[in-house]
Image (cartoon, rainbow, N blue to C red; front, side, top):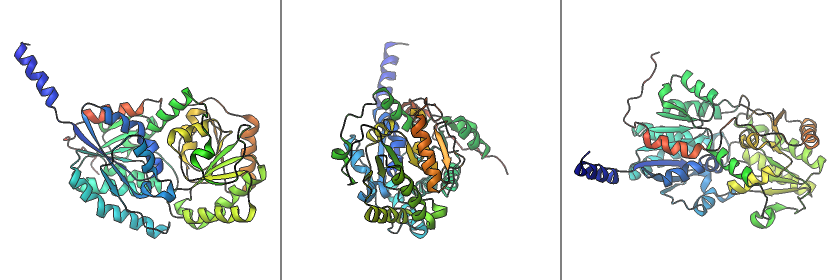
Length: 401
């Protein structure tokens, strides 16, 4: 190549327009599921990050995830207030509808070239529908998985609305292809939250005081001799039973008496029942072994989990990050039905004696080795690299029915 051609090539490379990647985060768990990918997109020379924060990620009562997002150095391109109060089936549908009203204006202003949506929350489908109707390519992260409740329907619907699929496991990839998606659009990237778990495993020391950093409500107690973590959400298809479900867990944990760090539920149908059950129990029983928190930074939360005796509830963190870190988990009820699990998980129903016995089993047997079911700790950079290379003008191939 001549000198002049080399110079032209250099100039063209420098002038190459960055691809605008719009990521929509609608809830606190979505941020931990995408954080390392956001960092990688922000650093990537060929990508421009447009970060939209919406729904419960903006609200203080659900941990105000936006505060931690800003503390981590991310600029917010837009805020979308779309949560209807009530925590029931009607407000979930209306919240989704508000997202469909607000997000088109956001995307029209930002003019993204790719929209990234995460996992399976009901607000997520509003992101996918909006981008699809505006002819913006959609990338779905964590499709192809099986679980209980309404989440699975939402997840599979978002898969069919998406152009590219960044899945966590080979089994998830197989399911996406079986749903009719072109195998060339499916990438096994692992889960970005495992990247954070890997960082914690390299430096697991709990080097901060949980109560002074995150306050919370309830008695403060010594945790150096061991504690457990509880994170229990309502199940949308069983929302009328949410209060009774959480009462069973509260009874089991209170009976055992071990120090317990309990985290507030997500904004789903039934979360009002879960919250009320917690408040009534707290006021009537005055549990000296339970302290309640709204939220924590993802690194701090995983460090708390790593140093615990185990996690109890129905959160996917028990299945994903805790399997990687080898943290014992008691999974209650149907919310995670069908999800790929490691040997760290014991499954039980909503019965306080079964929950108690499973917790005691883990306390007696301790932690086990970690398993790399959902990734190896390098998902974020892989996702950014793929986003820079995919053909956004590609005509999507569909199977004929």
